[in-house]
Each structure stands twice: as structure tokens, then as C-alpha cells.
Image (cartoon, rainbow, N blue to C red; front, top):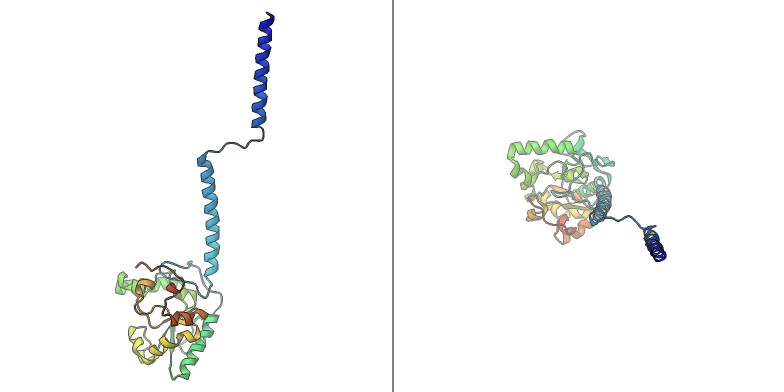
Length: 252
């Protein structure tokens, strides 16, 4: 009887010791998470970080003088520069309308360009500057209806992907080309002068000849884009803005 009692007490002491040890180990221990829970949280955190970072970077680039806008990189529907002004240059039309405007820095550069042209006996006319998303939407639809989508996509941007919405682009022509935006402008003395001198005022021929696979658009000798100080390098090296920025070719 005595031996049985001792055995019972021994079992109780052992079990109590195991319980105390287990309890001490468990106290303060973090709840167990499955690999799925841990992985999912990590993915969500990384996704949020990337989304926040990307959103901030893209938004801040909208107003950059060197922002790239093409078939791959677009602008928000409601984007409109806050510093639009009308440059003091000759236009191919009378009155002041939406397309008369450029961003202030680009407008001042255009005035310089036209002054340089005049010094060389060249008379240029501004044809089309800033275009809102809605304006481009109507223009694109009209061109598709008239010329078909395949042809239109070589010359005209879809809404939200037009450089004109940046306020940094002006289409330029001359009386000798009937102020038209046609390839014939390239063969006029004004078109030749523009090609060789636009960089002097910070502009580039945005869609140069033979670069359609890179820019996504056919040659447009009338379409000049203000990029500032990098214009000279782009001109000297015979590059497109995409090449200068080391961006991939555009898929048509």
C-alpha cells in the first residue's frame, strides 16, 4: 500500500513538472503562422510599397520637361499643365484657342526658335500646340473614320498618349507648305531649317525619319517637342527621345 502511494505521488510530480515546463516555453511565444499567411502578408506589403512608389514617381514625372509620352507611356485623362500661356509667335489661324497654348518654358523657347528663324530669313507658323484629352479623343476618332485605324495609328495618338497634352509640343509649318502638316513640309526651306536648328532652342524633331519602329509613329517633320538642354545631344547623336532615355522600341 505504501509503495502504491509513493508511485502515485511520483507520477503526479512528473506530470506537474512536464506541465510547468510546457507552460514556460509557451508563454511569450508568438502565434504560429502558416507559410501561406506569412507569404501572403509579404506579398501584400511589397505590392503596397511598389504601388505607392510607382504612383509617386509617375505623378511627379507628368510635369517633367523631359517626360516621355508615347504609345506605351500615357497621361491621366484629367491631366492639364497649370502654366499654359500663348507664345508670341505667328500662327496659321486667327484668334486664341486651346491649341494656341504651350507651357510657359516651352512657349518662351518657341519664341526664341522663331526669332532665330527670322534672323535667317525663315518664316515659320505655329499650327497646333496643347490639346486636352477630350480634344485628342475627338481628333483621333475623326481620323479613324476618315483614314482607318491602321493608318491613323501611324500618325495620330490615342487620347491620353498624345505629346500635345503635355503642353511641350507644337506642330509647325509655313506658307510655302500651305501651313499643312504634311511630309511635303520637309522639302521646303522652312522644313529643312527647322530640322537643322530646332535644337538651338531646346526642341527636337520628335518623330524623325527612319525611326518609326522606335517611336511608334511615322516621320513627322512638323512635330517639334521641347526637351530643354538635352536637345543638343539628341540632335548631334541622331537619337530619338526613347533612345536617349534607353527605352524599349514601341510595339505598333
